[in-house]
Image 1 (tube, helix red, strand yellow):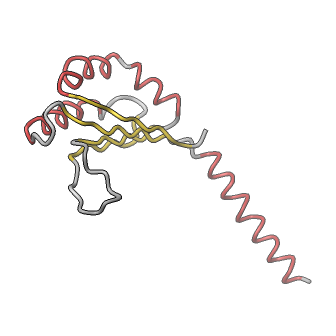
Image 2 (image 1 turned 90 degrees about the vertical axis):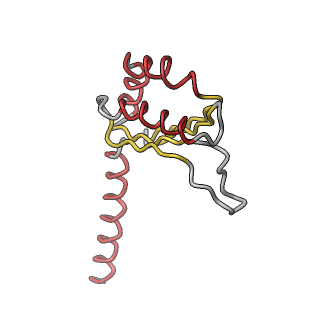
Amino acid sequence: MKKLFISLLFIGSFFSANFAHAQADQRVSHVIVVWLKEPGNAQMREKFIQASRALEQLPGVLSRHVSAVIPSERPKVDDTFDVAVTVTFENAEALKHYMQSPKHKKMLDEQLKPIVNRVVVYNFGNQ
């Protein structure tokens, strides 16, 4: 009986700890996949990457990574894009502020949109 009680106590604490962690983890991921107007152009890719890096220091950004596609021979891997960006934010509110930031809007309008043909964005996280 004592072993059963200890087992149930352990299982209960494990699930409550994981539930509490999920509730506390409010991080949001923002993934941007980009096709340039000149697909495969290494100079345009580098121009996008360098311009985009200026946004790394905006408030609420926990991490940010931008780089060029890695070509793949696997049929399930989409390697048709040129560049991708992954940004992790503290929470959904931080993502909202980032999107509304004058620095972000200016960078998009003046440096990135002129060289971009298509963009797909994915946002996900605990709410």
